[in-house]
Length: 452
Image (cartoon, rainbow, N blue to C red; front, side, top):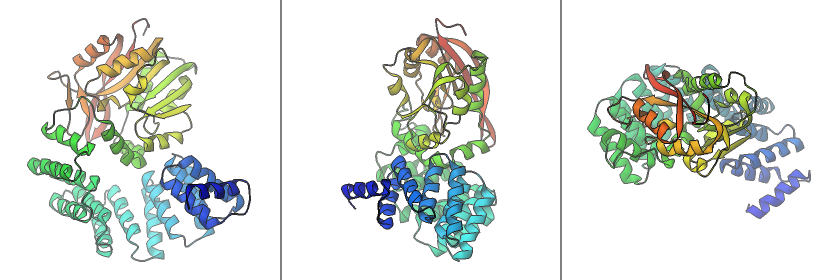
């Protein structure tokens, strides 16, 4: 169906005229897959208005709402699809995927086992069950299930990648590397398997092998931003960039969007909590009278904490998939896909408060951001942000995990050099990584005309 035919069919659908269900569903699923979520949602809802008990529309609309951060509504719709069609294997599998991404692992496992009961030897369900067992910490069981999945589907590169992850979590780096190399042999140009193989060698302290994996990755994909950034972090090859590239940020966080909130919860992630406490110190009464920017908003974890202060709340991020999740929180007045400094450039006196939680860790050189933020703040404006703590041996350092840490002396000099005034700077624990606390800076700054 071409675009003109699709539009004609959709007009019939919206006007309540007779339509071909198969054609409409097919074209709407294509819209959904291409990322046109608002248009796809409108079509699914129109189908359900015309045919209230249409299981496919319920199923796909449920998935779409989950993508937009409205997971509870999504789960309810997928369950309705299953009630309408009790043997709906794909709906059970996708319900398990939603539960997996929202951290309800026992429910996810139940869904996958239901699929396997309906279709013994169902490879995708076995693969997904293996991932859940891994996330539950049962690595031995995860490996057994994933070995069964790979035996049933020996040409599925994703299954071997998940098997490699389970071996690595168990500490069997040798078998993990074998699985990742098998995945790459099946699909040579996939970024995740190269990244996981690199991480496996690095954790095994096979640093030369790890660097060689990155070089091989760049042979296959010379412009891959993750490979370039990671190679610079490990070896310094290609020079240390002043900030992570747009491509690196987009690729990293688009891939991470589905499980972002749940992963950070497991890491005891506290950056939103810290910035909220700093904002409360500046504004003891939340009067909903500020124009607020959530700079690097991600999935919107800071949004509900900032909304009480805001007459207008804007979120900016480079990752479209993270922004799709932020929409579901329904607290932002506007969400924009943009690079932060480029967005702020040219703005004058627009924002009363700019907040950036765990975003500037992808910047080494901070002065361009501080200058742009200073210009964008109103005369009484404040800037609140977090960074990862570095030592004073260098201004900033690109660490092996891909984030930058900053020296306090550099941060203070960069702030004042941009025309801002430091109100407060203190050490906080931002999260845990490999069981160890990640220390950071919590900073409040203001326009020089502002009383802190």
